[in-house]
Amino acid sequence: MYTEKVMDHFQNPRNVGEIEGASGVGTVGNAKCGDIMRIYLDIDENQMIRDVKFKTFGCGAAVATSSMATELVKGKSIYDALQVTNKAVMEALDGLPPVKVHCSLLAEEAIHAALWDYAEKNGIKIEGLEKPKSDIHEGEEEEEEEY
Ligand code: FES
Image 1 (cartoon, rainbow, N blue to C red):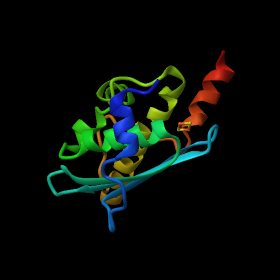
Image 2: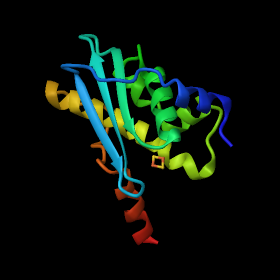
Image 3: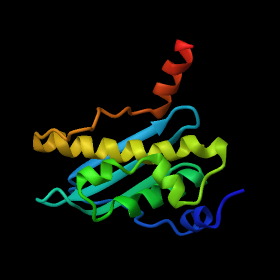
Image 4: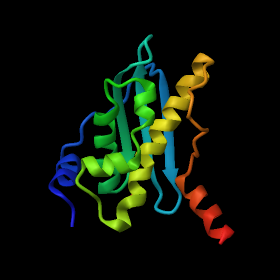
């Protein structure tokens, strides 16, 4: 049920680890399943992402999507990194089973949280970046209540 690319990134995740003194760190969890992801960004003076590492305590799909997300943002400007959505990550992995789509949101939110941390540390505003949620399930609950 998983594509070859998902299995590859799950079994050999890229960019696992931590960055000491990172420019920005973002941690996001999903209270529903209890999974947590942390992303570390090293951003240079030209606002380019020089390096990125992640740690995921979560399911296989969460590991695979974080791995692919780090590959997609590495070497990009912070603005291009903002465009890396969970959809883009899923496409790069040749798709995810529908029940696992929410797992890919962790990676997108964790990158946004790390960019937010970087912006706060440097007193800048990143156009198009909204304050990230620390729990991706928060949004789901609000939506459920509305309908
Ligand atoms: Fe929790 Fe996948 S089941 S992130």
